[in-house]
Length: 407
Image (cartoon, rainbow, N blue to C red; front, side, top):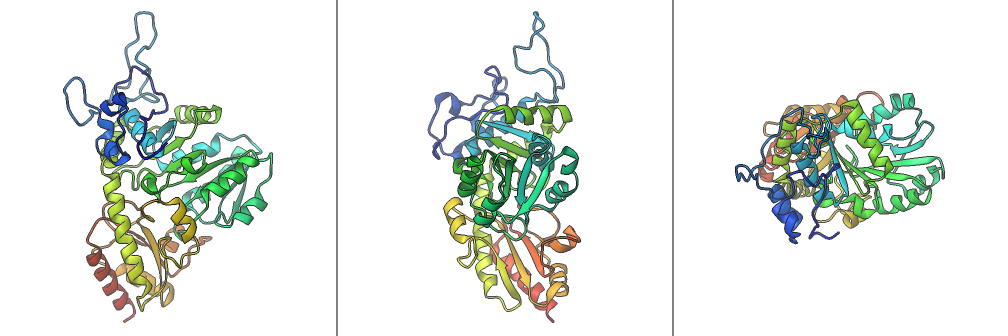
């Protein structure tokens, strides 16, 4: 599909649900930015409200013949507000189906749990630390054979694939917190030739800049807590799939049976957040690029890790698969080592010392302290999540903190 998108569907897609929007009914060729801003343009039929209501019912009336012609049976797998949010995500990702979860971890682990015992899985050496920890500790209880590989190295990926045994290659690009880049199209071709699927954690890139399914991936995952919501007030996860195949239906069943669902109020807030997704992400990305170029020349910064810099080893690939921007995340390695990095984080005022990313407020974090022993994160690294504040203010605040840390 092109930027002028056809109407999407969520994971259940009953014809009798009310989320069919004015834009969808007319198949109007509006851009994703326009469709997202209007939450697909749905108008509540009962009140004519432009903001969709929150549906909180946990149970639904059966028909006289004991069936559920509405398509809604019980609140755990069936909620109209959740389905509306899923439809918006499916639109953004150009997906055949989308599904929301109670957290990003619930979404990601559901993909791995849908595999069969004995399946071989490749995952990045640098990735979200909690999922990496789960793969190294819990995945074995599911009988999975997990191998970590540098997915920014195509030859390493190709060498690690076991045709007929590798069933999933998991990518995270840009990868947290070093922001390395994996070539989604090239790795998808390798995977499919070997009979494997590709799942992509696209939390940092967001669908504004990267659409993994269009590049050949099978499933895309988001920690919707982050940029999709954008206001640091919702815990949520999301998956979008290129196909409604048997593997996808297995994930649907896992979410239902394990109760890994998102509540209607959280879905309502997520819809609210996705209405400004394009504006927030582009604004934050422009500021991140500005800061990256300034800190490259800073006397107290040894290295800036940002795929938008021409010096970044993954820049050329990022330029091909990230359209319109390189994201709102960057890391700086502070001269003077860990002590100087920690002191710098302690010295900011406008930046907030907190875990997470993708919100409207800018966050700074000494990442190695959070990840603990075994982290691939250098001890002198500060991870920066750039929000929508004035970039001049953000620079001045961190510049002063760096100066004070170096006394």
